[in-house]
Image (tube, helix red, strand yellow):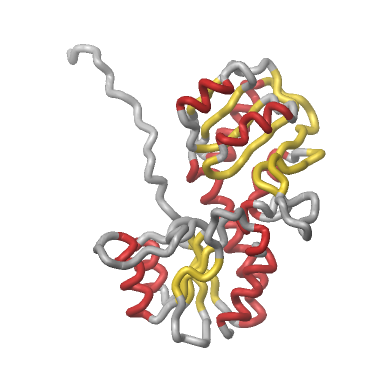
Length: 272
């Protein structure tokens, strides 16, 4: 498949015109290769991801996070330099679908709303573009079909996220009816979530001062940047695999690694 055709198929699911103005979606690294047969998909454009993708025989890589937001000269060694070196030596392409994908709430970013069966969904921050349909935006709010006790909701969330410990700010409500969430670093939308009447707001990368500012507004749960977006990226890979199957393009999803570990302090009791 020609590169432009493959990228046009990606952009059917993540149109770059709907990306945030500060973002850099699209081609990150170009190549001379003009026939593509194997797409590798992952969350981060790390050297480890690129090495694994190339070892699988990929000639084009797709990551959610961009390699850069503004052009950077390769004037120093490090991960950025290593990624460029690996791709250019292999004559392989790199493409990013970042906020162009994040805003597609009826697509992969909506996976948590799907498993929670949220009703009456709408974006927290609608896309500001004249051609954007009303369901496009960053973050989502919706209603559970049946209100749940917070403890039950927390258990359900834990099962879907695959973690048992989260950071939380605010006071846990007795019950949960309206839920808002934003994959990735979404704490800046906490006010919008609570203004929409959310009983719980789920996101990642919550900062101290943001938590302090909204402490009395509602309950915010930090599930980590990785947790929501890794699954979203895997679902995107599955979506693309189905779309590209008839064209004979192989799609491989390469699992990422959460760089942040949740650890428990060892017991301080005396050994006996």
